[in-house]
Length: 168
Image (cartoon, rainbow, N blue to C red):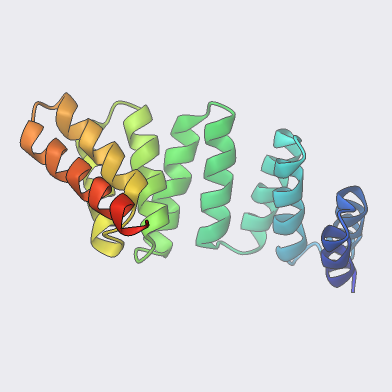
């Protein structure tokens, strides 16, 4: 009941009320992760990063789901914990190796840590799964350029231009 009520409050733009309702749901059923995960998302959106991390941790204690690892990793990255973000991205890609977005997030964390070869492999995996992912193409292009592979860098950028022109 409280989770459904929180969803209605979000639709009505009453985020503080939704957070209160999700807190009640979490208190009633602390063994379920859904209330913690949803409250974490709202806390992240409203500028409470520490509260969001605590809720993502609790949600993952209840049930280890790839989407929760990915969300916690994004929050960690925003707080400057790139190592923690990479650990979460690795868990997300282990659980859901078919998600291009998770592979791209892993590549971002690896790149931020200076692991350019691993970042390039992660972006390549993302592009195997979604060849039209412009962000992965642009970032992989930059990695190619930094490694001196101008031909590969140009090929990725050419693909981005093709995709951009096809959107018109």
